[in-house]
Length: 126
Image (cartoon, rainbow, N blue to C red; front, side):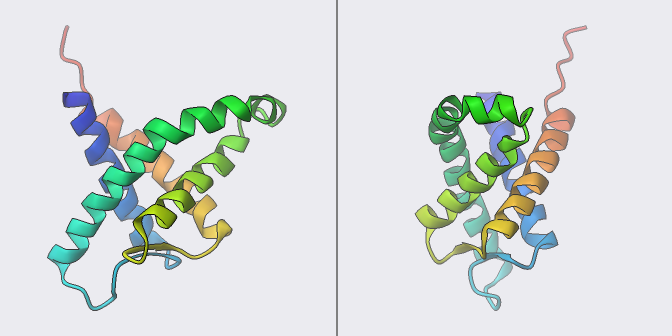
């Protein structure tokens, strides 16, 4: 249960960083309150986590030849597609403007999510 919560927090932080760094990825209205944007961010993080849990393994399986051929770089395209799918599912409250923004957003989300997971997922079994 803790690992699910850590992944959820990591996704939320990573999505927040991507929205903050890229002008082409936005959360809701620009004049919306901070609480409204935070709620939207948490909802988007939940949907993004479900998309990555359900859809991403299937897409990776069927694109395995491309992943091998590109030595894993096709993962950037898969991450961009998952971000665009999240945009499509969520609707107007989360927008990604174009495939280029999705690729950069996917890269930022991957790096930040990895870093947050490294910080939060400490096993003190020593």
